[in-house]
Length: 503
Image (cartoon, rainbow, N blue to C red):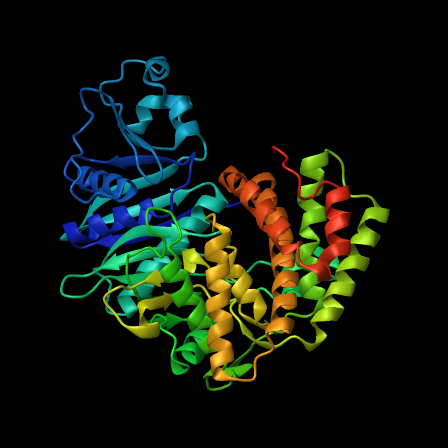
């Protein structure tokens, strides 16, 4: 496969600084950058910008490692900065811990030719040279995946230029369990904005009836879903980000930064905030929402249903991932048949449950608390592109049994009670039917999450999610206490699904 090669003209020092940020945001663990160029071509400026971007500190002191040969920096991605000019032999690389550096993070190497054959074949070459009044940067990536990441980062910079934010400074903000990632972009004279990087979803292999998992579960495939739902939610009185610029084809948005105050306080839930969020849900669930939203002439997003197939494919993640990890063997056909029978019966009971716009992930990571505002505007809502039309109770379960933080039973009760009270005050609300739907949806969601968190560890190499499993099992036990779930509760207990297992 041919190398990825791209050239970027750098008219001034600011352009070199921006290039450092763009490259930093494309790096992953194990990447090596080999920096080539004569004196005065901007290698020091580029290296300093890249390291500061990775460290998340624009004022970080970045001395030249000419005499120490290596400097180590911590950050989102640890990076070691090597200057091999004074290297007398390739063997000295062992003393510098060159190979270990690649296992721990990334490496930036000046005078890489001194490393000889020890320089990895997949190293990304950055060649700086004089070009008229400025400089030319030539980037060569032998590895296709690294080249794709760099190309994506450059596409983001080009999108910012088209949006009038080409001179903005970029910094990593956050990622999530999907392929989406977010950046903070800052430009003098403006409030910071958020860059949403949401490439089109790549469907996995078929898992049932010739369809991929994402197709059956109705996962949003493009950023158009976010744009459509953002518009509908805004018109419905929900505080969602304003969209300043969009590139639907490439999955890029420049959106409002709703604030930095976490919905949690010191990592703990606060009853007042959960009650406020429940009341916002009550307002939303009392409205009629469109299931077809036009975002441009001829471009319509249809909000999918949370149908039987979607519910089952999600809940069966428990069998697909959690059971093998907990027991050391796959779920056998008899277990699967009984599991499906029980869940089909529960889904039947949802037939008459209230349905509407279901946010799907209405929980603490996706809610911004804005104490200086009033009413529902105190709650900024993000990450809603996967919304469906389904049981309203699902969102209440998502909030009150927050997957990322332990919600004590008393705060769960306060949250649910606040929701019910607000719905009853508006009239025409069946609290008994809601209680049953809440229990079923809580059990469905937490069963699914047990599977997802194990999948994130086993398939995606994200072991941090395993620490949440004891909480999810506790939530599951709470949900199964409802009389309507007695048979499922017995089944889960017999097979140890709710028992404490260390993975």
